[in-house]
Length: 211
Image 1 (cartoon, rainbow, N blue to C red):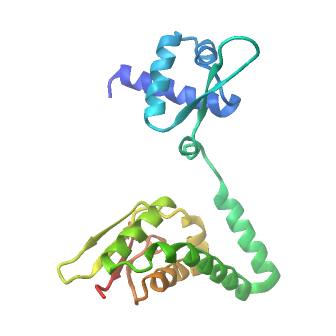
Image 2: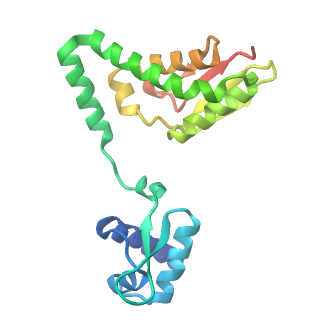
């Protein structure tokens, strides 16, 4: 990466940081805060809008033409650190303190049932290949970085390259077992887990039969 490209990337990071700290701002306000020209700021904002990291809306501030305020999108919010992992672990530990291992398992069972209600309508009535593809899409919506392929024998391989609940899975094995049960329920077939990140693997890999 050249120095110019690196500096441009840093400027866009600064714009995102300002919008996160101060809320919606105009190009002129960003220009003043960053100490760079308004034309340059608008060029960066155009690229951020192209990448779905910012959006613009017209807001009337008193008399005169509406101001164009730039704000972060939900996609941009995901770039900033979140510590939901610690909160999730604390909540599960609290449940365990109150009701023991049975209460924790009941919590995971409830979560699995809730996810199944969300997944089943999107898989219902589809052939197996379409079901696997839709399941991968559902997982990607939740940050699993999933992909799938069909093997020569007709079976399918579903691979998750990221685990959004990794911190919980490493502390509570029920996370992985209930995930497998969820996939079996929504696809209506036994599934083999061939690799797991919680057990030291580089991904979570599932083998799904053709029928």
